[in-house]
Length: 333
Image 1 (cartoon, one colour):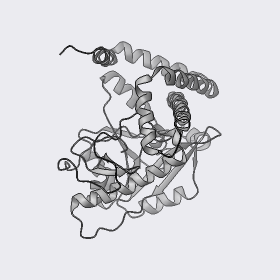
Image 2: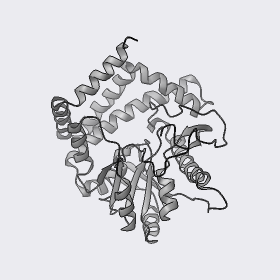
Image 3: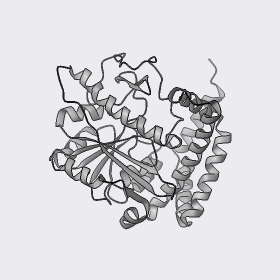
Image 4: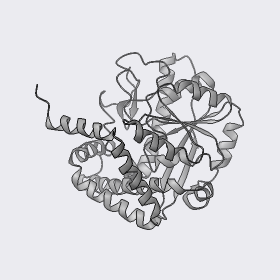
């Protein structure tokens, strides 16, 4: 079968992304945006988002389909309005990420992050148990800041990240993400560093709101079954470390609210391991649903979240047994 134009273009982009030239261009863009005053960089980010909404026809269709699943009660016009704002939000996140390059710890605390009431008390209470802490995040708000800000806020963190295709770009992005002490590890081989961090009463960060493959558990998300990353549930069962939702939600004043919530996981009864994994994951998904409803224009709608499984609130069995300690997470910022 002849290769389609779309596949050829995708292959070209992947090959281009693996070159030193692509890395150099990205480096220059990061430095140029960082050199601009933040309001100017954010204006450029907004323009990038608006242009992307017009040009990105393929992802736009996926986004509208996802919005219809999550918000069937909203009109088509309302969903399009959310999507337009979502693209602008992504442009703002791009601009803000570029400013990580020169950000100082005191900038995070004084100019960027506003902890919600009781956030530090919840963190300290969870860490007082001495079992470490599992910070779960999603592509809501500014997820890159969710991990980047942890060390400046006083909490050592080991973040799990998917390796970016193109070693030079991956090294550059990792360098930016880890500037203020966030220890970034790739998901392949991440289990040992994660366990070590928990044993040392540190925090680990995992983003877990994307499709996790055919072997992962199917768990309800907006009343439809979705393949869900099971790593955090298995680590919780193995170590007893508490689970905490760690999100950075954009505020009207340009700063971010640190939405920090300890998840209330029901005690284990007579469930099997696989059944209890789904109990834990359902609590994580429920918290993400609440956050998305609060700020629907701040979720990454372009990901194909629901790829298999039918509608319904009951959790269905996975198509195949879930792999133990799978690390199918995306980058924790």
